[in-house]
Length: 182
Length: 383
Image (cartoon, rainbow over all chains, first blue to last red; front, top):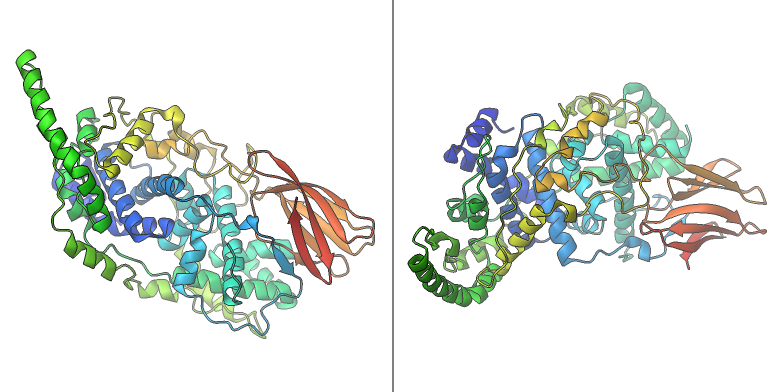
């Protein structure tokens, strides 16, 4: 939690306070960029761009919004821009979806999913689904905080999150069965 | 509770959004329905995996890396003293972070030097002719291609450092489904039920920033990174060109749907929560404003239903997604991951082996789709 006094000082033109503020948020900014872009160098670029934008725009932040949701809004927008420019999206519905009625987990080895697998699967999600998942799990945001960050209605946030988890579940299930999709 | 309702509750369960009563209803259903039990188990496992993702940290201090650049920027203060000049300077130079960046900067270095020289000459001429003009010095800040090798190695070393807090790992200690699935998840739920944070006030706060219309043009003296930055700022000056980001990809917008039931521990966000985005906002805020606020995926379902001629299957379209239930026990047998198509116009073949329907993509293009049922497997094809 960033000290409100620090934000106020930064907004009033205290440069040192502003730099200290950036230091406090740089990890959370980078984390979001890393999982949204799934690429270290792109994440470094995007995170720095986001920090610079926070630096220049600090005067326009108002206390009615939470500071960390405001910051995440900035970094997610930068990442989505970046992602759209650099990578055409692979849609999982280009492939036929086969769903077996008797396809349950009995007999399945219930090992935990590897972080790497999960990260790759997140990278296959559509932009908005991926963003919601990252804010929910990497920033530990509530539905409301995600809604505030992205300027979306609460219902839409839930719907994106639920669908995203369904997709991830299918993707990871396939990985574990040795199938390759996407 | 049917399986569809169960699915939504499972989702809310992993977000710790169920109250006691809903929790026990879900567990009761899961205890009776093997399909839902296995789905529940997968979902809990997925959510646990997501919560345990490493909290990666940057391999070097990002703030240190941008400090030289920040020194040249005049931040907006809360009194709104932004200067377009600061935006120009912002685009002037970024510390290279890695070999890739170094290469980019190296490529732009030579023209930059000549740019500096040329700017100097031009400035001299300008000064001779316009004594009141400002010297051009800091707009042509030189890049700093040195000192990158050590950062490169640092970058490759530390990407996935295990910076994970133990609290993150322990959030889902209990919920697993076993022979007696009703006991274990509840313990986990109780221990985490109160962790939800409320979001507080609405979003009225983003108005009032100054939009900078006086922006630099992309010139040959900028590195690719900087040019990219300039494009962003150009967009910023042209809000009509700001593109929509999150919604609207999955289908036509549906407007004015009310929020659903209140959430545990969270105040409902009502329509007023977004009003702040209407005014003069930052580019970050503008991205989401004026967009269709609700997509077809919302949980105020638009449903369509068709029972197969042989009475064996019941096809349902909810929010554009197709599901199939077996009539004999009303079990959900087909529930694929969602995709971009909005399905409608269910039509069964006479022998009940093929279900035909129309899929509409986000651009409004319609394609014929069908679901074939063979040996209790369901294969969807698009034409």
